Figure 1 (tube, rainbow, N blue to C red):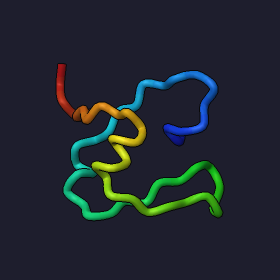
Figure 2: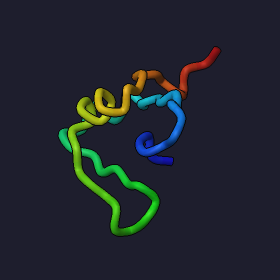
Figure 3: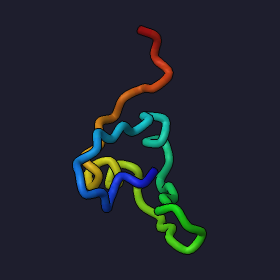
Figure 4: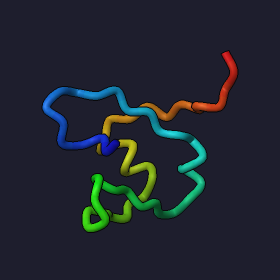
Length: 57
């Protein structure tokens, strides 16, 4: 699910493993709606919290 374009604010979580890459590709639900972006800029633009989804609780 893309973190942008919703009528209500969503909580966005960013896997810290993405930050090891210079560029990632984000999509908006169709084959034609993709873009490349630096992962830290994606986290910033989406208001995402960098959180490890693999950590045990």
